[in-house]
Amino acid sequence: MYYIDPHIHMVSRTTDDYETLAKMGCVALSEPAFWAGFDRGTVHGFRDYFRQLTEVEPRRAAQYGIQHYTWLCINAKEAENVALSREVIAMIPEFLDRPNVLGIGEIGLNKNTKNEATVFLEHVELAVQHQQQILIHTPHLEDKYQGTRMILDMLCDDSRIDRSRVLVDHVEEHTIRYVLDEGFWAGMTLYPITKCTPQRAADMIEQYGPERLMVNSAGDWGPSKPTAVPDLILEMRRRGHRESLIRRVVYENPLTFFRQSGRFQFTPPGVAEEAAMSEKS
Ligand SMILES: [Zn+2]
Image (cartoon, rainbow, N blue to C red; front, top):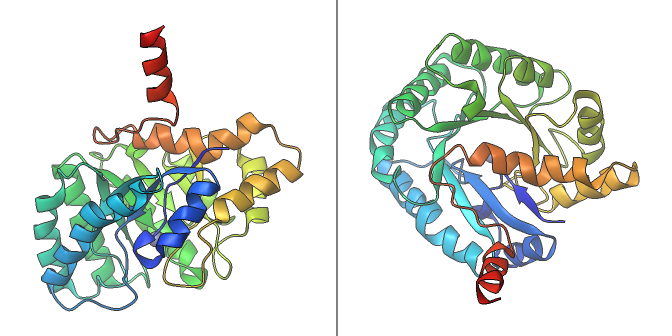
């Protein structure tokens, strides 16, 4: 089955991982800007990172037939430095018209601090000014419930935000309902330590249905598994779910969400080939 991973940090993965993802059916992915395993010291470090996300990774992915998209921001882990964050936010527009940029993300909260909230709101303002979609990171473990509520409150207070163009990631059993009820998209992150297992994700799909729901692997600098989405596909098959339901969550939903960005020019595998064949006949 073809699938799309809507949240995976390929800068932290090897080229062999790209090959494995391709063999497992991954045809496109999106990589939000995040932490690089260390705190960067200057705006120049972020400019180089954004070049990596918009120039280098698309080429690495294309070698294996995978289409690479990205989101730009300074992440919540580094947002405690408000002065640096403002320099990065001011620089982001240089990259917004690159062909693989889908929007602003992953912005959000890490420890739910005042500085993080300030930088979050300034990113939201940037997204609104430039009509960008938004991808949100919610905090982990004991900070998740409160942080998710804070994020939803900030977003719901702003009537300019089109909720159907916002994806709130890393939802779990105790936060998913609030995200979906408010009209946002929700992403479940399959992760070996914190976050969610394929079994728990399958439970939530059974409970809430596939509407506005996606799954991703994160595949970041922590212990993570870049092939976690195929694990969910297998778990859903084991439980006897229809292929159409599985495909909706792992392929059609990301397509629907990403297509709201004018820059998402995805061609499903085989479509160009079939068009060429029918022209010949
Ligand atoms: Zn992430």
